[in-house]
Image (cartoon, rainbow, N blue to C red):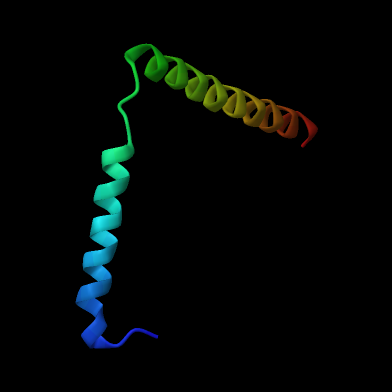
Length: 62
């Protein structure tokens, strides 16, 4: 358990870790971004389509 006296050190250490992580991160290219965006939208559409089919079949079975 953390004591109140060590809390500022913990926060400072965590912020330094975040800064180091951001320094290592690199920006993706526009092509990579749009490829990932298309993939995510395709997955969302597929899951929505499957849900719609289940809902449609369920309404016919009532």
